[in-house]
Amino acid sequence: MANAILWEAYAGATPAWGDVSGKRVVFGGSPRNIDVPLVVGEWQRGVHLGTADPGIDACGKNHLPSPRFVTPATFDSGAGQEHLNDTNLAATECTLRVHATRDLANGLKGARLFIYDGLNTKTRAEGIKVYAFQQGVSGSAWTLVNDGEAGIGGDNPGERLDLADSAPATDHYYYIALSIQLQRYDVLPTFNIGFQFDTAYIDQSIAATADDATELTSTTTVDLNEINLRLNYENALGDYSTIGLRWQDVHIPSTATINSAKVLFHSSAAYTDPATVTIYGEKSVTPAAFQAVNANISGRTPTTASVSWPFAAWQNGVWCDSPDIAAILQEIIGLPGWTQASSDLALIIQSGGANTNRRAGKSYDNSNNLPPRLYAEWTAYAGSSSHIRGFLNFCTGDPEYEVWLLDNQQQRRHLIDELPIGFHWEKASQGWGSFSDLKVNMASPAYPWLRALDKLLIRRGRHDL
Image (cartoon, rainbow, N blue to C red; front, side):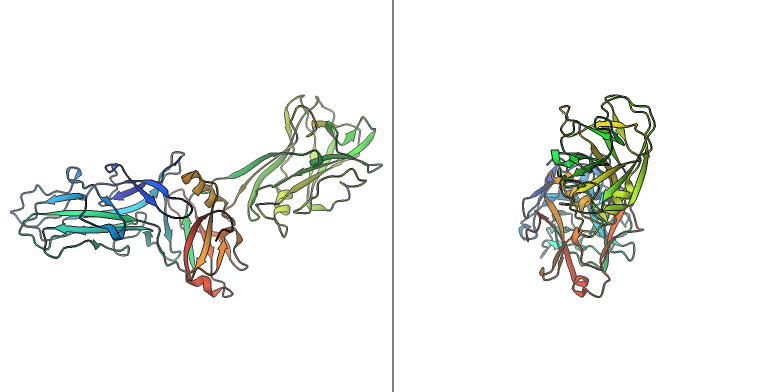
């Protein structure tokens, strides 16, 4: 696994982390196991009553047990142990709190792998159970200690294990077991998933001959094979020009907020004379490839949004970019039918007609292999599962995970980026440190079954249930 998920155990009022176990935990399931390390923290010093306590039963670093990592069915005698001199023990001896965090090398430290209920600050780690076994006490067996409700809240949720001796006349050994597994979480009408939102971007080149073209203004003839795309004026043919550009499979979520965007041309010569063109988008989520048919560019439906581009000076052989065209892209991805998986995007650059000055950039058919590029940055917390898939990809090295919503009979299901009408993602106000939360609003009465939502299912592959 390229990047690990770090499981930590926390003890005491302040964190005191220590990697003492070197153990690993495997989440079993489809399509493959996720192997993660587990890190266990220190014991909290016990509270002792009575003057005869010898004082050697402090729960510190030197008495840290090595937990046994098992499933609920395989608690067979334990492995880690803590020796307590508890002759005068009259209160809880030690407390261990366990919780899960994600600690990744690129600065995504502290993102909690837990769910916030959307109504209050109480949280609980998901998938962690703590079991204890006290040796030497009649009838003692593996017992689930504190199932996730009491003693949990704030920014350090987890399972709390209180060790108390039911027979304080003698010393005993305590065995500890941690069962870590993906399990049910009963969510409320809103819930959050805590993870960081990075700005996503594309930098995509035109990839086919029929994806860039020139149309002459007076004749409307279209040429697909120009080596250079001359903006404003086609000097070789003595006519003003309209340029068409098309990018296939532009993977921007339909609910993204476009922060910035531009089209870039690799200049074919140096230019300083002034000229102005106007950039439009084609108002379609399935723009056709360009054809050598009259008016094949100018006859397309333009977007309402447009951007004027008064040219600056261009140097030869460098990338030259347009003004910000975020408004054009925002309009296109907001069209009905736009999907992150399969939509295409086209731009139209129309001559200003005021003079015969120009700028020329290399086309797809130029032997230099430097066709026009589309660059865009966006934030996607308002809509799709792209960031969740990216997080899973980052943690597991597998790009094919999807996140599904299932009801409690697992009969109704939706990809998170395909929420039913009436449901939407929201950026929640509750946060942990510098991390944002994502909330899906499930309050719509049109889908009462989602009020009984059973789980988030992480599953590999699209539509594979």
